[in-house]
Image (cartoon, rainbow, N blue to C red; front, side, top):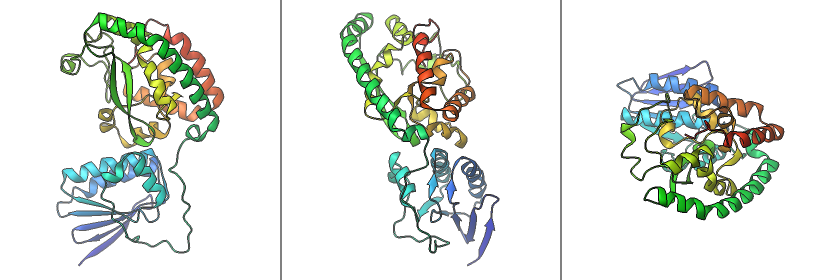
Length: 333
């Protein structure tokens, strides 16, 4: 048996034993370290003699959405190379982050394992994953609940006339559901008033893409019905999502909720936008969402929200949202 110890610039210790690589992860697996970890992982799996990688979480007590994103990306890369990826000594707060996204069912987490470098005389606090202050704010949550109740009351009043208009415009259901990704990548189901023809997915390949990178948008999408264009322009199609705000999947103000397909295309650093709850409105919506088609610009707006967030900042965005709803060029993605 041969072994080789190495240390990367960001305190990541590796030990090679024949065809197995043991990796001791750092105490914090957040955006900077997560990006570097992803880079090194890609180098490791190019070794044709490697059959197993063991990730030791014994020292890791802080993880954010970028850390989770790097693990998901590396897990998929290992599968492609037919390399077994095992998780050892996963701490409670990291397990919680995995549970939020249902990842404990995907990752190969071995129970009753000890850290490669044991933690000696160090008390590990059982705290939740590293998250944004907006997610921890009880006042923001209270505002969300009150706003969601009001929004659902308005939705109930408008439901029948909107349903009649949709039915008269085109055959099909009144509501459609989508799977979106929220805080820490957790998937949830949203509902919208239908704004497209019923065979929209079949026709998807025939529509030109006007948005770069991870998400898709066409302001002249022929699949959108006449009533659907009105619903989108006024954001009425999204009113059923007040239910998601009420149960905590979303917030009134936040970042744009990505689809699972978009998440597949994310770089590790892009996962930062999942540090907050997605919102019905936010920087992207109030800054000309129908005209912003570059994915990196959307990321920049989402990160701006995270950096500038306060209750006052939310209030200002809420005031900006009102005129945007009635602007003729404010179509949704």
